[in-house]
Image (cartoon, rainbow, N blue to C red):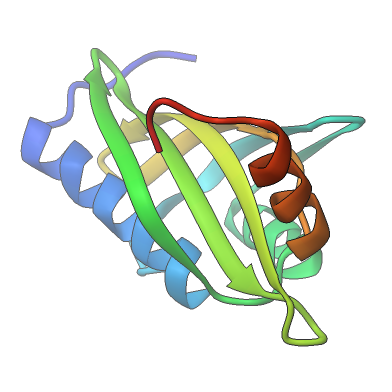
Length: 140
């Protein structure tokens, strides 16, 4: 795979579109390149998808609810970006869920060409409460 030089403002725009996608479930037309490769690692599972429709289907099938990204960190790389996010959403029964994710993306003129995702796994309300009762974080 060869890297294509993309303007820093275009890379940042793809990262912002990606966060909007997490929050709404709607992908901007140029978010993913037609031949995007997705590699998703979960605590006990790994999935891959090739192509825009297949990559969008992974998210839709495993996480159909729109969410909220209260905190994120964007770091540009020579070929794209790294995003670290906290995400919350309401699950089927209205219960609030939480996860932390790291996304490493390569970006080309047609959008994200490769995306590696590392997810902590989804924490339900009980897991979030258990964590809060047992762990004091020095930073959010």
